[in-house]
Image 1 (tube, rainbow, N blue to C red):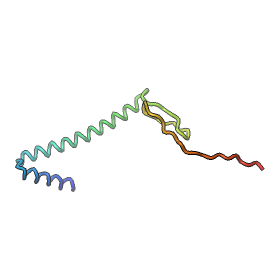
Image 2 (image 1 turned 120 degrees about the vertical axis):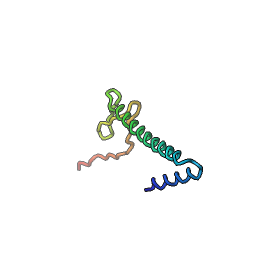
Image 3 (image 1 turned 180 degrees about the horizontal axis):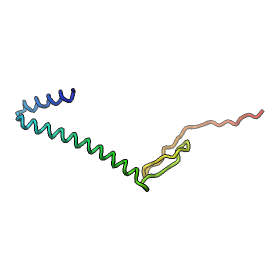
Image 4 (image 1 turned 120 degrees about the horizontal axis):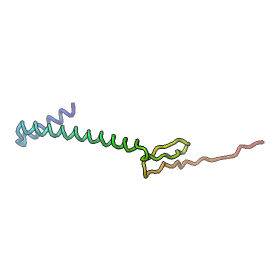
Length: 93
């Protein structure tokens, strides 16, 4: 895979810079650990955002342009629909 190719290039680069095999192994392990932790942080951020939205009292409801109920975060406004509709009365002839 492309990830494997990039990792092999990194190993070759570190080796030419004089890093020992044990050092390369440690660097790769730490880089993988950082990537896994960054992914976990993203997951926790999403879970926190979902939890904050789900708490009673923290959600605000507004009426949408077509009458639907829209859930909003505190401090935000519903998007306004600025479309224009031309009304012409029906002729009753």
